[in-house]
Length: 262
Image 1 (cartoon, rainbow, N blue to C red):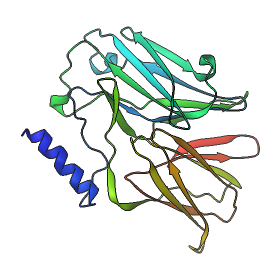
Image 2 (image 1 turned 30 degrees about the vertical axis):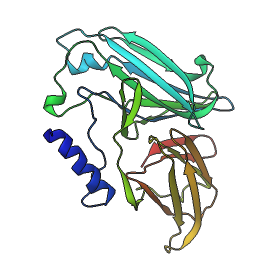
Image 3 (image 1 turned 90 degrees about the horizontal axis):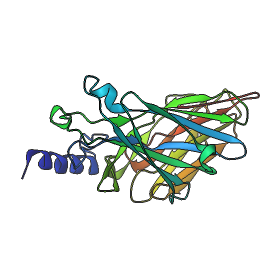
């Protein structure tokens, strides 16, 4: 058995039983291309966009390489809504504006890159990863941008595989942000696994008392938006068996909004 296979199995068990766990595992294929699971929102005049670059122009700038891009767009129920394929020439980029593709409502999407050229990245312990900046706006407002939330999946023989760790026991994620500067905020979760996940959110006030608690389930490749309207909430904790269960955070103010990850 190869050392890499042994390490992968070892990492699975240490994560599953929370014995000095890691956040991610290695892909099961060579030269894998990784992707974030990005959120999009096209409801009620909102829009989403992302600029996709030929990633291999940056990885190997001395050798012109075409980049074959595949975008998988899932609705909030985890169903594949649309698939977009195109090829980027060396140093080329393309802006994808979701409203121009007749995409409505909200959900999440992957962006996978591939090339016919042989790149010896895996031997060096590296994988190309799409973690670009996604822009969001409400109707005619300015674009707000947020960087990719977490690298979590790759494409293998047209099937989407995950590198996210999942445990037998519940883990806790505490966003490093306060929520008492707004009366209204949302947590945006998506599920990159091929199984449903359960999350339990506990919200605390200044004196560390629980003032709100929410339990939700998110189906495979699904997206959930959970809204809170409580000025007492100072901070919160997220309980889940998914390691690194970090949401996007949406704060609404009188004239605009902010969206970011903690």
